[in-house]
Amino acid sequence: MKMNTNNAVDAGREPDARERILAAALSEFSGHGLAGARMDAIALAAGVNKALLYYYFASKDGLYLAALEAVATKVRDASLAAATGDATPGHRVVRTVLAHFDRILTQHEFQQLMQQEMIRIHKGEPGAMSLLVEKVFRPLVTAFEATVTEGVASGELIPVDWLQMWISTLGANVFFFLTARMFQQLNGEDPLTPDALEKRRKALVEYLGWAIFRDREAGARVAAEVLAATPMPPKIQLPRAVEAR
Image 1 (cartoon, helix red, strand yellow):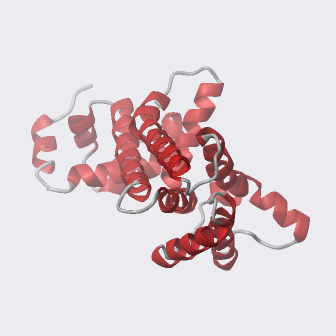
Image 2: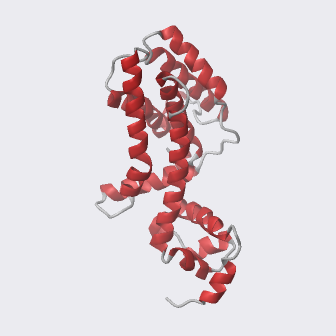
Image 3: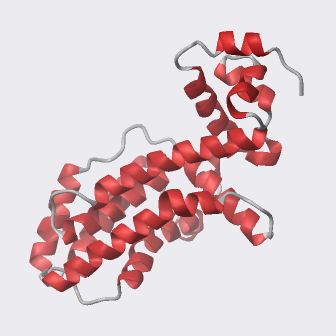
């Protein structure tokens, strides 16, 4: 492919050009997938010459991987912040599960890209799941295992297999969002309004306080503390992909 490198370099002198490209690429790839995304649309949304996309990232695949890695790093860092820090293991588990709920609620592009990669795996197509595993899921699973193991050993948490706690807590969040529209048809209430989401979020944390701690009264206090310290994410706007579930 031929392009005017000098023009690309000149445009690239804008300090935020690369970041604008990544943001535009994230939106385009999450909305249309790797195959359906258009480089012209990304350049237009970023306000740059199309040649600059290739100057920075060499190819459409390269830009896709860069955008995926950028959002994956953001998600990993936010999730690890909840899983670590100066708090008891029980605090950290509750914070981790709540952060996961809020991630599904707010990190729409990441969720859509992850779902697309899962579909590619099921189809037997090459994809970037290995990037997500190494960049996000391996460090998060490692931290969760260590936290639960520590909590069980200290006597704060109930004696349970750490993986089962992972499946039962984070899996419940996924199940809620996947089945939300089915439950709306069952009872006629929209579970994805801001008020309903805040109620579900509160119920999640309160349930953890009673379910995973040996001392349930202490667990209830932890749940109240985590809720007070972690307010509902502002300006929730559900993407079409979530609303269609």
